[in-house]
Length: 280
Image (cartoon, rainbow, N blue to C red; front, side):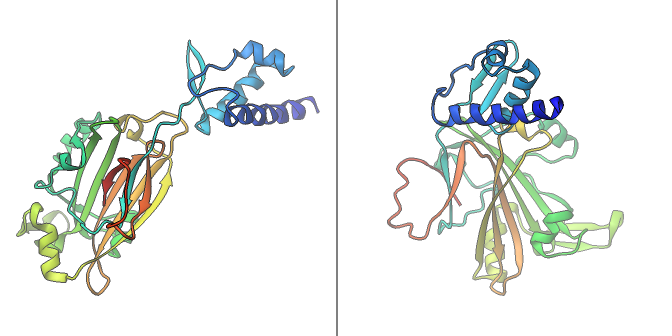
């Protein structure tokens, strides 16, 4: 019974602390009292307090700085990623200049790994589509695609995003053979992908979707995210032929505490008020 009461107590304490944070009893950036003080305040043990704090840290409300204490996590201003913008530019084209929207290219820690695979920012790598990438393009697994990627950093906020693109390879190259004996002859340059697909399959249509997931692998470090409690915002834009066949999709991965997505239905009257960071 004692163990059950202690197990329930950390949840109660987490609820009380959460309420204090959400109602600004503790201000953003403010340190919480130490574990010993809280244990005395709630008449419980320090491990119980530690478990309650870990719960709130996992929810993104607190940040634990070892050796310094526990702090209320500030909520930064979010910038908008606008979907439905009329100009569907190829953001991964070598000819595209992100500086016109206030971004710059940035090198991230995982670049060394990518270099071993002989893929660099804005380069085009022929590879097979697997998993959900094949599902999005409505092709069987193992179908050849062209992969491109880049990391951008917002010049004002210093927040980072990861962009990736997958184009059906048979639309921009001639593919002969199978498996390791496959030969690929590209006949369209990356900067001309969108124009070529428009000529072949236009008028093109676009769909956009937004979802969230928790980061994994090196994403936290690459995007400069808090290591605990920050979801990843994923904005996906799919290019469709006039008959509805998927031809390409672009994904933007952004820290969920730094960006939000909004749909634009009337770009002539929309006033972003300086908060729009990217228009896709």
